[in-house]
Length: 333
Image (cartoon, one colour):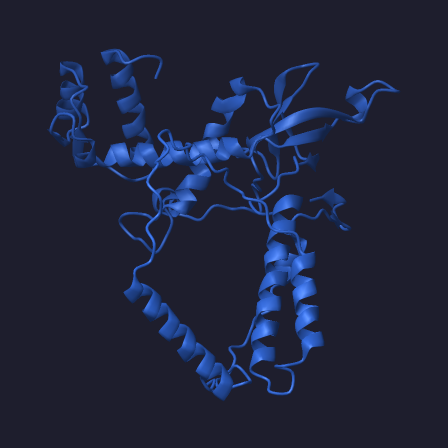
């Protein structure tokens, strides 16, 4: 739509009904918001022949189209987040077709939730073999045919991938730059994705997490030593654990302390513990000393035997923050 005039609304509605009618879907009921006109009502009554009804004013939750628009906007924003940083913004409209294609595969068909909305509307599944798709906005290099380039000219042109060519077999739509600045259909591309780091994959975060893993291992080792009568009172082993713990630098504070300083300093001294509080603390300390004397090994509670859960090894985590090359396609990730 070029604007929100009654003529543009009518044109968009007529194209929508023609599209669904061509796919064998004839709407019988239309829910409308308050942005309408007499021309629209006449079209729905006389030409489309459907029953329509208005939703309450300023109540978007009553209109299913508003929720669909929200899902579409979120999906398209996520699509733009993975494009190349240097892709021109005037190509955003060229990404709409494939964004609709991917979103229709993520949403279920309302008449049959076991299939995608794409299959429900078009009556068949999308042929990914005939029309492969890739990440939108990726920088690519398209091959220039030998009869279209000069003798010593480069064999390829820099471009951006903007979607699959649905009317061609295994072809792609690309925006070529900077010489021509036009859209080309090609079946030979080399892909050059921008390297991105997933959350938690930076060097600082990996070091931070590995430091906590070592601290957890030291805690587990100290607990096992405390429950082992043979090594409980071994000063050399206790000193080894203490040295290992102090050798690890303290993790830096990830969130800065922004608490404001105290504006008014209190002259009232802190309260001293009362006699009853002091007697309670002294009694607790005496009880702890007695327990330590009766149990020199340090294990006051007998650990219950239990079977350890089987741990699944996931090799995926070994590749976090790393780069590798696909030897078959010569692609870098």
